Image (cartoon, rainbow, N blue to C red):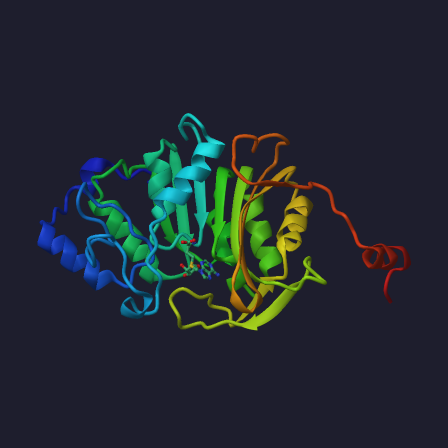
Amino acid sequence: MFVETRRQQKEVTLNKIELENAIRELGPWHHDIEIDGQLSTGKVFSPTGKLEKGKNGGVTLISPREKFTRIVKGLYPDSMQGASFLDCACNAGAYCFLSREFGADRCVGFDVREHWISQAKFVQQHRTFAPVDNVQFHVKDLYDAPKLDLPQFDFVYFSGIFYHLPDPVTGLKIAADLSKDVIFVSTAGKAVPQNPGGMTMARESTTNVMSGVHEMSWFPNGVECIQYLLIWLGFKDIKLFRFVEKKLGRIRMEIVASRTEGRLEHLDGQQLDNKWRWTNWQMEQAKEGIS
Ligand SMILES: C[S@@+](CC[C@H](N)C(=O)[O-])C[C@H]1O[C@@H](n2cnc3c(N)ncnc32)[C@H](O)[C@@H]1O
């Protein structure tokens, strides 16, 4: 059954100490998520919800609320009511819980690791901070997501997953095909200014809980890589929400795209072209072909 009722979730009631112990046992956590008015999965470790990566099994603890609120306000200025939300590689489900809190009717998240989905289900069972009904989680590899037989969603989240995949183009296409309106793509990259549309291969850990599971991965070499893929996948309105240059050519980009032109008018960010601008070299290749 898709909907788990509030009454079913409340069957297990833990007191504050039991909740804190359970949260510690389920760690390390990547998402700081409010459980009730006082307790959150991060505040168990410190009053601010912050915890050094070194003391958290090498995992960064983040508070997703602020950034996600800005994105949602830009996409749904009034409320997410009537919208459906899908998170690919959902981790502990923070974005599903926030979407539900902001009014989304139906939220689904999947992640390849049981570790994260156990956390998401724990939060769902004990979160009294906001509604948690109509939220569903699955342990699933992105490449097997089509087997879930999901409908299309209004808003698809694709954050921190592109650069963990051996075939990110197929991965992004799976997510894009599940979006009927908006997709959010956040990815790390490796800057190669002379070829920003390309990708750089890397070896992927399969044991780190934040990593992929297929041993190989690809880092986009610039914004154009994701932008051009989104154009190819049929998105018409594309905005660069955030771009960060880090040390040693490492970059981070967050791109929002919609299937409808003008749809992102209220969202912060730099408007990107929705047409391919091929270089002379690429045009020559297309003319001559390669054999
Ligand atoms: C860097 S974390 C990002 C988590 C979350 N999406 C966020 O933005 O906060 C990468 C996540 O991708 C998951 N993951 C890696 N490879 C996956 C795959 N092939 N299918 C589904 N999830 C995957 C990991 O288990 C982990 O939760």
